[in-house]
Length: 204
Length: 204
Image 1 (cartoon, one colour):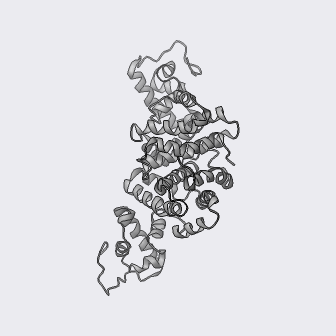
Image 2: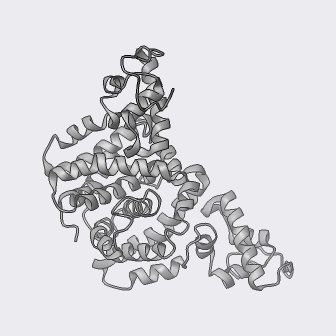
Image 3: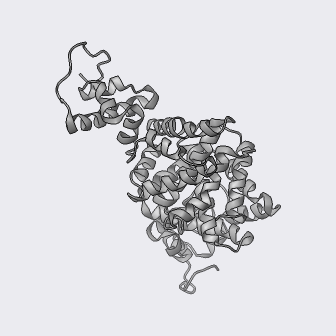
């Protein structure tokens, strides 16, 4: 079965009727399909077909393709759409600091989580790099930028990404000192204004 | 004759008397010794001994341990000490922009050079990460920072490193668009002020 692009109407593939089995099967299928087709090329329908479940299960369990990608591939311990809402909840002038604080708090909780593995896979596989790029830039940062600045949102999003990827590298992978052990508030105060300028300020 | 701590007097290891053979042997030996002992633990004497040449050859061919590390391990197409001199040659207020411009110009010339391979090895091998951290932070950026700011030079150097590693990741590894194709002057203008603030400005 697998990539079946036209599910037989009326025929529910009942191999995994629901529950944690469905969720796990969707995560497995998502990793395969995203890896084969990239973020843009992957469809909810193809992932559900590979998992042998109805496409509605993706929305039921994950809320959509973005969140499934976040959990299956990036292994983000949060829902990107929910995160966006939380980041936007507060003064625009503190947005940069909120992004840094939030990023560090989430990843610190698992000592970098999947970040080091992600970097390895980005450095080795072009497709993973493409998926990350699509997702991080287009579906997270550009969404933030477009809400606060009409000027060159793609470049601004890239600039934000460059700083945050560097923060992850320095804190969890290359482990710069004192960077990897500095408290979150000190780093949010130091790096927040960088994100803020990239988001809403003068970038030349 | 350099840092040789106690060379056996009168006993020159003549296996490779000089020329390009000596240089290549030193590069090989340096890669081994830096990998075994890290940047701090490696000595010029140990590298020369492994290469079977006199320790004076390290200064003769590379000018010292730093430059040897830069060429053998980081495969930098320049001498770090010379680079430092060039970066400091100009107004302190433009230092951030000079760092970004210089970094991008050097690495762009070889489409990222060894940067992607370096990231792979950092993500896989703790020792390589330690070497990079030692070298990049202590022997390049801290040297710059200490010349312009007495306040928390280690943190400032780490902050600079986080942005520049992120620039390398975004431009040469994950290839964010439009980041990976934006011209150097646009990026120097956008990112230069970040480095400038990390070097000499208010970091909270």
